[in-house]
Image (cartoon, rainbow, N blue to C red; front, side):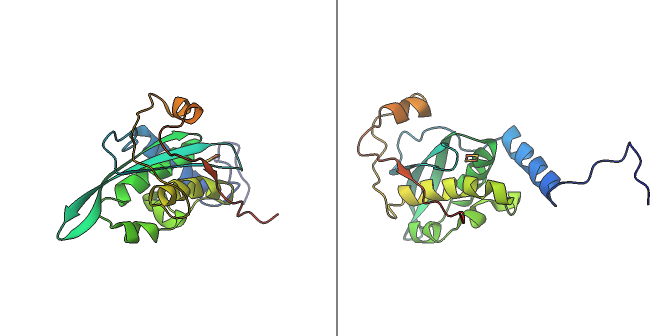
Length: 173
Ligand code: FES
């Protein structure tokens, strides 16, 4: 069948249009952005792939005899996909124990965004890395003692015992 000039062009990557519209939706109303000043844990990671950085704060509470995540928030110094994933992830984390949260993979954390396209997988891994850092899985964590007015200011002058840890390059070379 002949394609008319007015027909939409086929997506270069199948499902990319759908993904991009979901990212746009998430960015129109991002959830849980900004520092949690009373956080119990904070984690920060930087991506060696693109230089972007993300920080995540966690606040725990007691519920039904379990210590669960009450609130999670983030600040991103990076791309829109990472912001959209972090927005989804910080909603998904509510009510989870640290153990449950620690079992979530980057693809779990994308929530309604669905699977990330190959060139955006590291954006989800950035969010996963910040979560793992906050949970103390393989990196130092520290209470959010000093507040930084902006994420970039926080990176320029880290507060407390925060250590910026590059994610391991998981892309095949
Ligand atoms: S391009 Fe760097 S985290 Fe998305």
